[in-house]
Image (cartoon, rainbow, N blue to C red; front, side, top):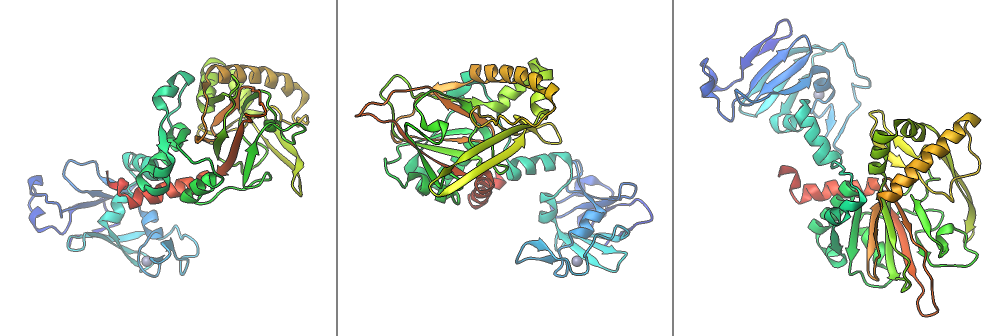
Length: 421
Ligand SMILES: [Zn+2]
């Protein structure tokens, strides 16, 4: 067995009998070339002579030792015993490759010994391509932003019965929702179990101050603007929650026979992209000015007063979109920013609303449809309509959360073998 010590850079062929000659042509599948970059404190593995190698920081290897003192297989988690804190002074002392067990063997300066299977290492490689693949395949699929004119191209329909009984269909529905933010479920029965059944297939419903499920019917004297028949401008649901419900499901039980009642939907991440390109000043204002979103009222016996302060466009540390907040009725008259920031915000908002309306797609659901969309990303609305005594538009809504939906997406991908494709 060949070893390398920490005092020098070493590039050794592992314990592979056929690789003892200097020729690279003797590589076989069981042969792995192990080396160190002492300067960067990296362990490098090369599986084939001309493949881009795998790389692992030494301190990370020590932290992720797989022995039974350091790692509990049963809970799939790191154990704190003897490793309450990361001692950054620990150094790699000896490094070798065991061909028989296909594993990397390391001795550390604290006397500990570690062994890492090749399959485990491959999944955790730090090279840029491997990290990108993990993020795309396991963390979250890459979102594709779209304009209203692309609606026909990106939209996909799923059959209710298939979602209840076919895991592959369930996975495809969640994938469509994650990538495009929108999916239409067709042929659901006109009964009260539909949203509960769909949510239970994913995990569980997200409850709010309006209960588990809510009914959208025109109601004179309604407690919420959505319960009126007037046009409903583009909005996200419940921006006044820090933990905003993140997937909306709308089940059409009865659609309006009047010319109105059309759905409007706009990919607000795409709208934000347009604003960023065309009006960078307005983009900056909408992504930096906190707005007071609020909802005051009561539902059944619960009185509530919800407030969340956040910009319309919310970005992460890398400038990527994490959330859109928008609702005209639920934007409070309290606007807790310095007075000079107010007019620029209204001017930026006018541009955003114009773009959001220009980019909206329109369609009209029919009874048995369940419209599902990403409430973090999409803004939705509805044209006005008229009820008659024989025709009362009736939609039932419920929420799911992305944490639960992504978890189900990963479990399904794993169970259905999609990770290896
Ligand atoms: Zn260990």
